[in-house]
Image (cartoon, rainbow, N blue to C red; front, side, top):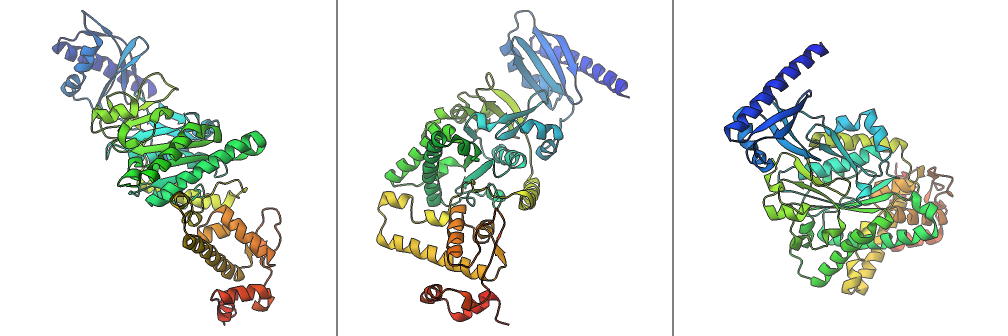
Amino acid sequence: MKDIMKLVFEREAKALGEDIVKAFKQYHVNINIANWQAMSDRMIFEIKLRKNTREVQVRERMSDVQQRLKLPFFQIVKFEFSIFIIAAKHKMTHPALLQILSDPEWREHSKGMSLPYVVGHDEVGTVVTVDVGQFPHLLLAGASNSGKTVGLHSLLTSIIHSKLPSQVNLILIDVGASDLVPFNGIPYLSCPVVSDRQTAYQVLISLLDEMERRIKLQSLDSELYDQLPRLVIVVDEFPALFAGMEDKRTSKVVINAVSGLLQRGRHAKIHVVLAAQNPTIQNMKVDLGNITARIAFKCAKKNFSETIIGAGGAENLSGKGELYFKSPQYEGLIRIQGIFISPEEIQQEVSRIKSRMEAIYHDNGLKFTIDIDDLQYTGLNVLQGSSVSSQERKADNNVQMFIHALLWTLGQRTISCNLLMSKFSIGWKRAKKIMDRLNGLGIVEDLDSKLSRRVLVSFPDDLPEELLEFLSNHGVAFDDLINAFGLDD
């Protein structure tokens, strides 16, 4: 059967090659087929130019020949000194992202990558995979409905499918959109997906401190530094961060923060992914020279393509996930059909990862977390002159959080920092502070390895007098304690 299929492919390839030569000849473009290869869904022809025919003439008549022969796929590729035409008589199909990620061969291949990314398929159908950790940053852009969002989803899904939260932490910033919301709640996140512009500024500024801490740690304790998870910061619609920003001082601080991360992030295992719809040098604000890896989907205008990949061409892409990829790993631009993942598949993968991580993942304390509540009264407020009232509000916020955590704890048999983080949507540092305070008050036992801590009190009378007075002063009635212990029946 295989021999018969091979014979059929060979006959089809030979006949198509002859048709291609004749079709080009109709436009006074003379070529010969020097060699050919028949694949399952496409045919590859090596061509030779004849009678003063130039390569540019072949390229100019490609679309005409494609229409004449009614071919769904028809492209020219130059490799070293040879010119190839890749053609398909039927619509080509590629395996979707989850199919590739589930392949044992991929799982083995991705082990050697720090941030694996399945980009798509090249002209001959080969899967293109890259390690974002080697870039170390990425610019991904294109027009609306060009495949940019799917490309971003594919990047994040590739990473979370292949790595553990102890290896990679994500900071996702999605101001004015909701494309990254499907990833909310995964254990890789250092904080919930950021959709508020002011919070986004403060998160980016706080990351500078983390970068400096990591760089310093690398020289002081390289062994501990090696255990730190990589940080991937994804900012979707990056120009939207600055839309309507009137405060030039704030704008400059945020730009400097992002520029600092781009310049020195590679020394701290920090990687920045900027996504944009219509990028220009002006609206991107930062020096893009530090971003050596670029992905351009179809662009509305040539100058957008030039901003992304340093040349025109992306404006001529199909707009159906087709892209140009540029990085120091490859010579020139690579044309790729971007990999596909549907919203339903993302939801499926996120659900699978959440349930899987709950069963196998234990926080080693090295996860980087950002407490959004703590940022509420810090960050930019320091630059703009924080007032006494803001400090008081922050202190009150911390007190109320502790009281909520305490009352919840009283109704549990055991608790852990992970449970506190999940229950109250707080970061590791804040959960650890609460846990230490509960332990100091004799409410939970001392830490025993990474096990949950047993709650030591069962009745209101077991609570220290000073704690009862503290709770009373903050509006917690005795009946509230009864309810917390579950003694109200």
